[in-house]
Length: 187
Image (cartoon, rainbow, N blue to C red; front, side, top):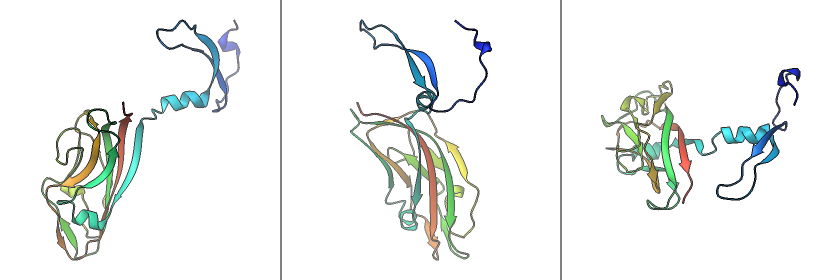
């Protein structure tokens, strides 16, 4: 076997190959096999394909009815016994829209992203100051982590709040949510 330091350094490309050992499934009589693995294939494993970031845009109509009609962001396959698992990780929230003299006044509890339709369990709470004001002033993105590492199996992921906002004028607000979550397959 050659001395590894004797080889020149290179810049890896996704189609480059590395030598490794493929381990057989447990409880079989198969033997480990030496194989080539592409750098791209190894990177795909490291990128945790079950961690997803999705962007959701909440419209004016959805915002104005948010207290009485939750917005369904994700519908999980299956049910609470054999459905997909969803774990919220974090979100960045950007509120915008509106015109001078218009506005929203939100419930003091703010809004929530939750599986249960209430601000409980594995959730993300959005303070009222981070929801659209509808005044045309665009703030900085608000970034927040989930309140715990719990998960939910089956059901919907909802955006909701305790009460519809009080509306002055025509605020025409929007809310953009970049949500990072882990999705486990249905079993």
